[in-house]
Length: 285
Image 1 (cartoon, rainbow, N blue to C red):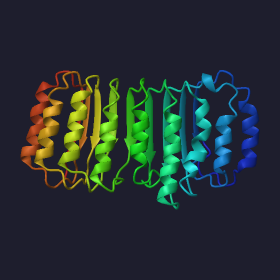
Image 2: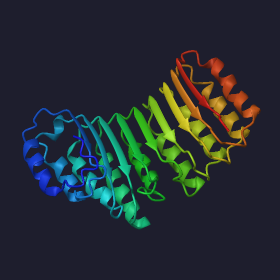
Image 3: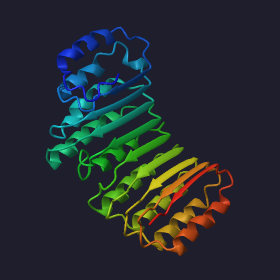
Image 4: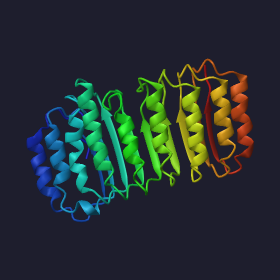
């Protein structure tokens, strides 16, 4: 269902949809785009998910929406998801996150994290937040801590460019992710995080070493200006041990402190990746 930019649509229109969904006994996949629908309240969005006749039949949910109120509305919008305890795939794309206070932001993502902890069958999780504000300074730490408790999780994709206010937050996020031993795919975007240094890249390397099941890795560190050849050497050493890796994408565009020495460390590691079928390296600038 695509309602993107339908500004004339309000909660009244959703009543008709809600009544129809009560009979959706065998619905397995749900995809809804509320982006730009500012006439629909957070409670209206929540009621859509609470109206499914048999939420236990739903295995995949893909939601795209805007938050134009206080960021605590993230918890209001996603509260309806708590009924989908057998969900396997969850994708959230959040746009235009403006206004609100840090405490509200952290409360919203913390409440959502509590819902995630109960999704014990979740295999794939994806989060994009365009404006990089809705999770607050510590919200992503709460989120990754919750994901670390999901035993079935195999794939994580989180897009959080320019988010971290300190390198300590980046370290905590990576440490929580290392607690998922069954991860097969990882896609993390740290682009523009000015506080990311070689130390964080070292934790990423440790994470890659401990995740023996990984066969797909995508890491984006473009414009992380504090990364040097030292960090690249650590990352290269970790990649050498991923003999079963099939897909590798690394983005270090505009990382001006990386020289030929750092690039050589990554290139040298590729010799050991005998299962690699897809490679995408970006060191432009």
